[in-house]
Amino acid sequence: MNKKIGIVILSLMSVAATAQTLTPEMLWKLGRVSVLGLTKDGQTIVYKVSTPSVAENKSSSKYFTVPVAGGAATEVQNAEALVANRNLSPNGKYLLSSQETKVEKVLGKDFYPELEKSTAQVYNGLDYRHWDTWNDGTHNHVYFADAKDPKSTPFDIMAGEPFDAPQKPHGGEEDYIWSPNNTIIYVCKKKAGTAYAISTNTDLYEYNIETKTTRNLTEGNLGYDTNPAFSAQGVLAYLQMQRDGYEADKNDIIVRINDQVKVNLTAAWDGSVDNFMWAPDGKKIYFVAAIDGTKQLFEVNNPGLTKIAVTVKQVTNGDYDVADIIGFSGSKVVVSRTDMNHAAEVYTYDLISKAWNQVTHVNDAAYASLNLPKFERRYVTTTDNKKMLVWVILPPNFDATKKYPALLYCQGGPQSPLTQSYSFRWNFSLMASQGYIVVAPNRRGMHGHGVAWNEQISKDWGGQVMQDYLSAIDDVSKEAYVDKARLGAVGASYGGYSVFYLAGIHNNRFKTFISHCGVFNLESMYGTTEEVFFNNWDHGGPYWEKDNAAAQKTFSQFNPINMVNNWNTPILIIQGGKDYRVPIGQGQEAFQAAQLKGIKSRFLYFPDENHWVLKPQNAIVWQNEFYKWLKETL
Image (cartoon, rainbow, N blue to C red; front, side):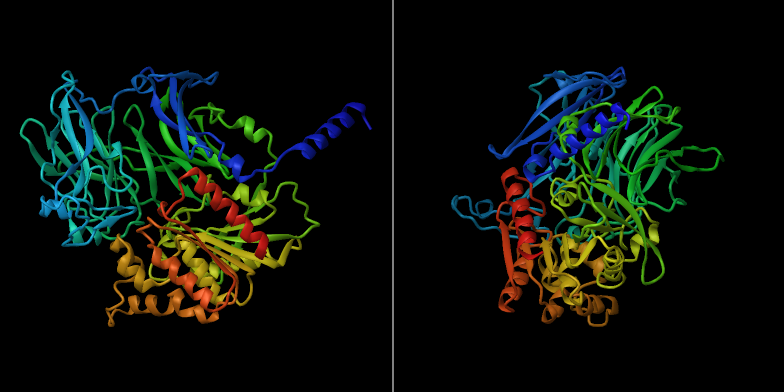
């Protein structure tokens, strides 16, 4: 053997022997990158790194700059001053802001001021709680103030309105912007109470500072209108879903040429847009969308009033996710990027040379010390003869001559894509690093495989999608390296529902289950969840409509509670106490059923968490209990 080659081989063997595998504690030491934007000259990226501290049970943040061309990062203290202030009006006179504003009487002391210690709350309609917060009569409102007088009183452009802008629960500054004419454009669903709970009809409103008047720019559309953005040339674009009540409808880019002309740039394209940004010259719009188990960068031309055809083109391609578009610098577009083994970092993609360049390196050192899993694409034929992508994540140092336990991962949503994202809870790299093969199917109900594939799941929660899950695990289980006697199924939200449902139909395929904030009883879910529009659309309507065939099929055939008589497998049930999307009763009912049937089961309860687990110490408990359960039962 060549002496140099021998040394290299020995060196590689030594690295493999000493490399660590990812643990929950390591995962929660990684820095989390978010970008503020580019400096005004377009040459420097300004970003934030948040690092969780398990000991302190919170995160701390630092701000940095780095050249777009790459290089050393520099810590800065005045990060927000380095990027353009989007809240400053084009004429420099006014500043935008938002704040919670008391609008409605809800609390006992609102009605009875002399009873200050009353804890009563009085509601006359739904939307009395949302996500993880009870409605106390306050709403997000947009304000503007004199930019040159810090003592001036901000003016509420929505005074007295019981509506929210930014939208609750997750809306931010993207929900209100300045127009080039110094008017304010904001996103709002101007419905209250029960009407709010059953609708997705947000609109774009324009507020005129001079006349103090408001007009609806999207009145004709009944679904979501969101994410307004002007080109440098003053043209408005935004995202639109057409159907009221359907939160996972096809999301299109609309360009508003003028009051009479609106053009849907992506109408003929078989996909759904995540986010977008105007090109500097206003001739194109770049956007991110799911495609075949990844998220990629696309471009679409803006023909304006010309007769030029609209064309959508995929710009990037690879086993990674382009998560967000940050800005443009010369021929480069600046984005954040992830894959199943790596948290978000900032990259540039050169639109001319087609070359990628990683610009931030926040977690490079941490990953360099790890022996990471490998992920593979696998295409499985479903029971209705369709081709389905299944991601298979293999443990580090995978040896095909050995046998490994396998986990079927059930994605939530249900209409959310399963791509190359990086989760700090449902982390495929971490799962595989604990010695499990992860089987993650892009089953029915996911963007990235055409609109029809996404829409098929509505009103069919327990139908074809369940066969997709079983097709995936059955196909992968044919491999000699899969221990067929050690299969588990795990998931959250709709994925948790999937686990509950599979527990009643799996015919002893699985040895263990884990369901986090899963829907167990569709009737009680309908009676306690806050966004009723979701249940109306996906389930077909309320359970009491006996002449509604779609709803009756859902509540009878697709309700996991109706198949508990078939349960015979250990199950871990996890629930957040402040989850009002899938309220606590869902987890309680499932745990009580398992216990009374004598099935090995455990209830992991987080009283101060919502549909997610956000606090560092709770997250470590979640991870440890997750893997402890698998060791006990698989």
